[in-house]
Image (cartoon, rainbow, N blue to C red):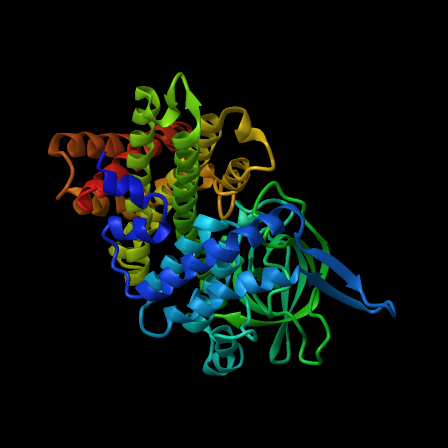
Length: 487
């Protein structure tokens, strides 16, 4: 493998350059990476080990305040990405891809910290697309600030019954009271709790108990009178992503604003989730790169049988394989970024291009998350016994990686939703057209035939035997897109 790509793996910005990505904010990314190397890595390690957020539910007079407290350096670390443009650049010049570039560099150093930027971006995009001019003036502008006063967003869909079957598990009810909606219910995994705004799935009174009965609402942190708009019951104790607070939230006649139309609410909800799934893919690839970089640094110094272990033929071959998998995963994830940038302003009924984006997003979210887990596990193996010790960084990447297949839809959900995009929308045909320029014609024809044959099976059989097909389709797509980048 060329030395250039091997060396590029040590740096997120150099890797982006090596993959041929256009970087309109080169100076800003260089500055962000330099800050992480000089200061951010130490802060991130401290937060993961000792400085995770905690909840102060009451003030000294017994008044409910639900204040989430952080170490001061956490805010300094968090603000770096917001100031660099993790949200505002989507609306001012460089477009969505610039926000994902910032996200990639951030996730290389702290995958959990990319979560607040992701849900803030998803909130801002939904508000921009479906909010009234009055709502945007009141709530979107603070999200685009570049100083300490920037507002954060959050996306709260999941309740105690689970997140996959939203039609059955969302119990939160929305009641129209004059000119404002009031939400009552509970959200079980409320990431980025304490954010100034959240977009929330709820069911208007009288709506059917199916996904068609759901609507999307904008929920402020505080009511118009300045009092808290929801109750934080507790913060979750998680294996990873410890740099973002995830809470159980209780809504009691909480003030909210409808985004879009109630009858198309499920589409707005899925649009929000798909933004996060694209970011999950980008973060997964960044974590893969970080794990390989850590393993590389160790393998160059660890001596066994008279030479560094990285020079042994088997280990050298494994590194080459992992870097090639990294390139393929990146090509898949970055293609979803490009398609999202093309399609995010579309509204139902969606175009064929949008359904191609949907399918690629499910493939990317499924495949890159699994690759992140396997790569982090392998990096621990490279370290041997040192890899399981909490005092060294490599074990953290496995903890962080284990969140990625679950957040914003498990592998099962990605497979079934991807199957639906193919069966009902024919999105696989658009995919094969996209890949035709770089794929081996015989292999492409074989894969296309497998998909078509699978879609002729009875529904139960389609679902039961979907994973091998979906896994092979994801791998095939990633490898083909890798070749499209000349990697």
